[in-house]
Image (cartoon, rainbow, N blue to C red):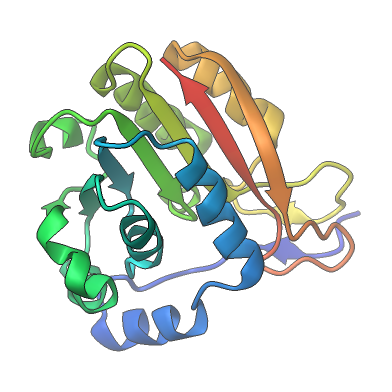
Length: 213
C-alpha cells in the first residue's frame, strides 16, 4: 500500500504563475551545492547549453563564477525568458535564448551552435515519462562532440520509498540505463540531495547524473 503521491503541476506559460514559482524556489544551500558540482565539471572557454533555462538561477550562478563560458538557454516559455533576463542581469551579453520544446525531437535544429556541454536542473522530469527523457538523452548524445559532457540534476524516485511518484520521477538506476542506451559511456550518479523517503514533498529527492560521450 502506498502512503501518498509525489508530483507537481505547472503553468509555465502563465506570467503570474511563473513569477510566483520563481519566487518560491530561490536556490537553497543544497541547490547551490548542486550548481557548484555542475560548475566543477565545465571547462573554461566552453559553449554550454542548458535544457530548461527556467528563471535563470543556475545560469547566473555559473556565469558569475566562470567569465569564459558562453551560454545558451533553451526553454519553451517566453515568460521564463522574461524572468531569466532579469535574474541573469549583467551576464546576459554572454547568453543566447533559444525557444524550443524538448517534446519535439527536432529541438537540436534550433540551437545557435553545437554545445561542448549540456546541463539541466529540475526540468526533464516535467516531460512526463521515461520515454520522453530517453529521447532527450539520445538527442544530447547526437549533439555533443566526442568527450562532451551531459550533467543532469533532476528529481528522482528514491530507493526504499513506499510513495507513488509522477512518471517523470524515477530511479537513478533507470536513468543510468537510459543514458547507456543513448550511447553515453559509463554514466554515473555523482550525488543525491535532500533525500526523504518517509515524508517527501515535490521539492525533495534529486540527483546529479553525469555522462560523457
